[in-house]
Amino acid sequence: MDAFYASVELLRYPQLQGLPVVIGGRRRRDDDALLQKYAGQPLSEIPVAEFPLLKDYAGRGVITTATYPARAFGVGSAMGLMKAAALCPQAILLPVDFDEYRKYSRRFKEVITEIAPVMEDRGVDEVYIDFTQVPGGQREGGRVLALLIQKSILDATGLTCSIGVAPNKLLAKMASEFHKPKGISIVRPEDLQTLIWPLPCRKINGVGPKTDAKLQALGIHTIGELAAQDPGWLVERFGKSYGAWLHEASWGRDERPVVTESEPVSISRETTFERDLHAVRDKAELGAIFTALCERVAADLQRKGYEGRTIGIKLRYDDFKSVTRDQTLEQAVADAKAIRQAAGACLKRVDLTRRLRLLGVRVGSLQRVGAAIATPAVPAEPASGLLF
DNA sequence: TCTGGGGTCCTTTTCCTT
DNA sequence: TCTGAAGGAAAAGGACCC
Image 1: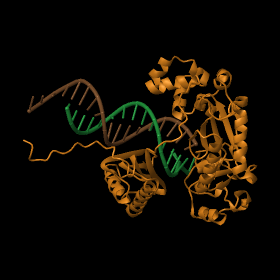
Image 2: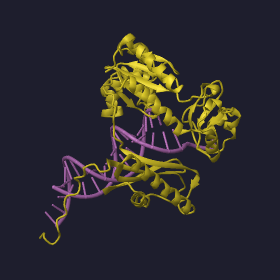
Image 3: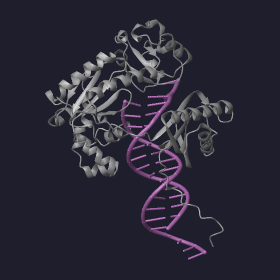
């Protein structure tokens, strides 16, 4: 299977590209006012002076994305805002505008499916494409098609996009990182040793900070070094499934198909409080947040046409440790009251004497509303009294 | 000065039934 | 009646991704 990996650069503020700018933080009241004030207007025309500077922001939150001048100061995605402010206090802080991103996301994916219909959705700004069946897809190793896609996206949205072309999804994703932003990179099977093996293991999609640290401790730093390890040795240290996968990945092997449709497994809502809350001292506030979360999950379920049997909660204590509890019901539910009741029972099973920073509500074991009951679970109860 | 929110998938533990 | 093994489902946690 030949695959594209395309990721669109959602940071579309041309007049800010030369400035240090970060997008992120928790939405505040004045953020909404600002977004409201300029609703519908191209963000490129919003006066820079309207935005606060990072050093003036006090509150929780992380960076969603940053311009290249900001990255030059060492700030980047997922970094806490307070830490970022220490590194680059003069950066401009923009609020996230997810509704707006979703609009652009939809448009960008429409453009792609018009050209190459076999597309896998990987989130707001990324997709995989299987272009094996696209007429002319193989011309110049895929470059012609990649250029067409880039141009079509730019025309329709004003967004630039990076594209990786390779024999499979794993390599296409890595290729897409080679020339960011708006680059096209093609990786052929014979490029494995020259282009992939010199890269750090962390560049493999699926190797995160924990695995990377473990690999480093074992003296393995590059993908090539990983590829040189005996598969059995990796299995001993990383488990049967993950160890074998690490070996395959290091050799650029990946058989996963491009999946065009999938059903959700769970739907959840969670929120980090502006300040840590205590179950007893802040009971009223916490109760209101809890109810609101249940209502939002219920609304999401109903809007999307799902109901679920497994209701769960998540909470994070002030030391950042999280716990979850869940409970599976006999009947799938989708209404806020039933969710709140089951979630409330879960809450009774956790330590509520410590201060909390986050609370979440989740519904899993989803099924479509009205779908045939795929729940054979409970065998019919024998009528008592008839049995002796 | 800490560290968002929405997910998926996998492993381990626990509990229940046979 | 007690005990233990086996296996499945549910629960809990953790790693990872965008």
